[in-house]
Image 1: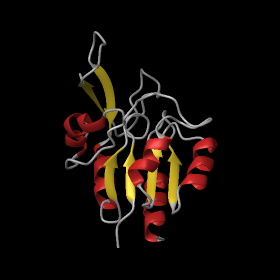
Image 2 (image 1 turned 120 degrees about the horizontal axis):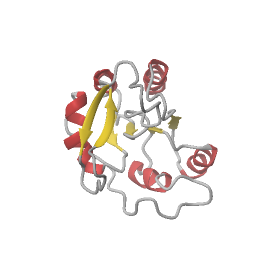
Image 3 (image 1 turned 135 degrees about the horizontal axis):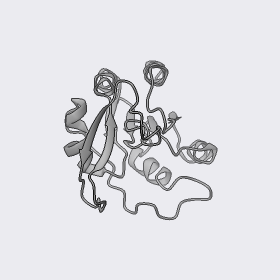
Image 4 (image 1 turned 90 degrees about the vertical axis):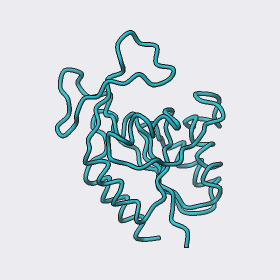
Length: 169
């Protein structure tokens, strides 16, 4: 039996970028990065929690982990090593930030294309009720869309929910 996909966004779920800028969240380390396309004068500030890598590796028993981030393959260079993750496949978005079906997040249509009928869980900070409805209408199998607060990032209850969902497959 094929494991479901776990589609992982970086900014929001792993990097709580919207947290108070003067207070790094507990358990997170600050990293400075210059990924391709970063045009800022200073390197990009990223907050990453190494425990998230441990949690994701534990979930890899039940899921096939996939980056679902605008970082695309660069998540393997900049994010994965800091979390202790191996190189992961990634969604190579055909168009980023482009047009999307009515009301949905621009990634949603491509997530369904990538999943190609496989069950999946998706963690992202931009998921809305429109995305839930679109996936329900257009994806013929189980899907868990888990919106993560971009001020907090993934939490223990999120990892528990992902583990419980996979166990129920």
